[in-house]
Image (cartoon, rainbow, N blue to C red; front, side, top):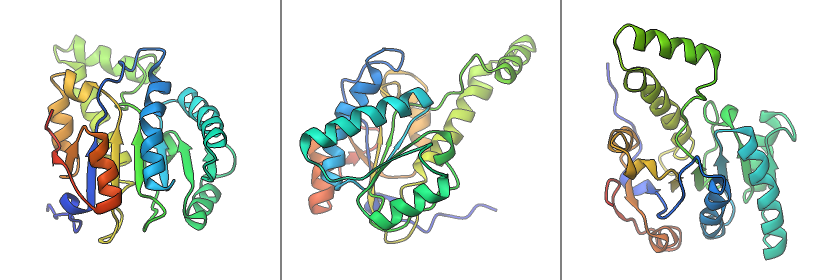
Length: 228
């Protein structure tokens, strides 16, 4: 049985993929993501999840955002994975109402924040599992040895599932509204990007900063999510 979602993603959400970001392998990538995210965090009034694929990115984001908030005089409480248990951090996030929470894998699924407390979800990059993981390496080797294509048959589907879980943190109720920001240029530069975009909730999308600010200010939405 397949049941349709009760959410009207086309009117409740907006997908934003920034332009001109470096490739995820570039040492400047995390800071470039944060540069792109800061205007969105301001427009959202905090109320943000920053979901990272690595703990190194979590630590860098926490350090950088703490400095940026202080310099800009932004009163957005900063909650970081590891400061407290997941349950405690989420309770504080809901209660504060304008917080920014930074987390990695444990916050990509099983997290339910309804209402205006969460209006922006920033995902740093496509969540491909690290190739040095022994179990993953063994699976890749077996698939390839049996004549398959491990990337297409295993790595890409797993990344899509994880990405959908992270994206699913945004709209949790029929009245929720917000922006999903995915900062990985491979969505448009790689052939598999279109497949990933098609797997996401059917939000309208944009690559323009002004459209995102307009969404928060006026409720405007952009072009179809696969527009370049």
